Every structure is written in C-alpha cells, then in structure tokens.
Image 1 (spheres, rainbow, N blue to C red):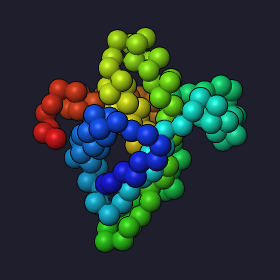
Image 2 (tube, rainbow, N blue to C red; image 1 turned 45 degrees about the vertical axis):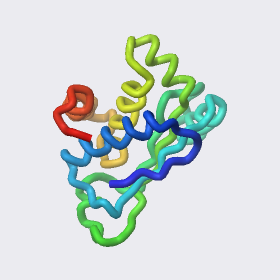
Image 3 (cartoon, helix red, strand yellow; image 1 turned 180 degrees about the horizontal axis):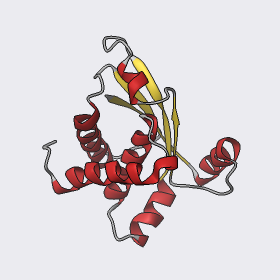
Length: 150
C-alpha cells in the first residue's frame, strides 16, 4: 500500500509514516498498487469536515473516509489495478497538543492517528471498539518497538 501526501510533511514524518504503513501492511497484506491520500489540514478545515460528515462540533486529530466497506471487499479488488482506498485528514496543531498531553513525540502521535485511520479505511469502526483498539495496539507495539525494520 502506498500513500499520497497532500500538504506539508517533514522528512522525518514521512519516514515515520512509511514505517507505520509497512507494519500495518504486514497485518493486512494490501497490494502495492493500492493507495490512500493523507492530507495535512488546518483546525478550521478539519472542524468543518467533522461537522459536515460526522455532525460533531470542533476540530479533531484525524478523520478517515473509506471508499470500501472493509478488508474483505478490498481483497476482492484486482491487485494489479491502482485503487484508492480512501482519504485521511489530520490536523498538525491537534497532534502537537495531544503529543504534549500524552508525553509522546509528534512522530509517535502521527503514527498513532495514522494506524487508527488506516484501520477505519479497512473497515474497523468504533461500533466494535475493543477489536479496533486490540488491532491498533498490536500494530503500534510493532511500530514503536522496532520489531519490523524500516
């Protein structure tokens, strides 16, 4: 799976993102032809998206917009075709605030919301919060503890 970057991303952020994607993909084995769009947007923009699509007020750290119902549907796609799995939006200022609040680096916070958002793109929802968190924690453990080389 590949990522298309929209907005500004620093070299170290891209490196951290690619590492998280590599680990994520070790769980789901998504075709290298498939990609998602990762967008860095302002508090105002993410607040508008949150309101319009989720009927929630205020900014948030990450929003995901999957194009498929889940990993089963994704696995039925032709792996040789280029396919967009969806869009993900994050707000850097919220990530910075959360990183400080939870005593993480900005890269770690970015990896956390990236993995969370990717799980949404492959069909995990908050309707089954325990399964979402279980997968998220397993993937992040490998990302942060270096069990897979980047």
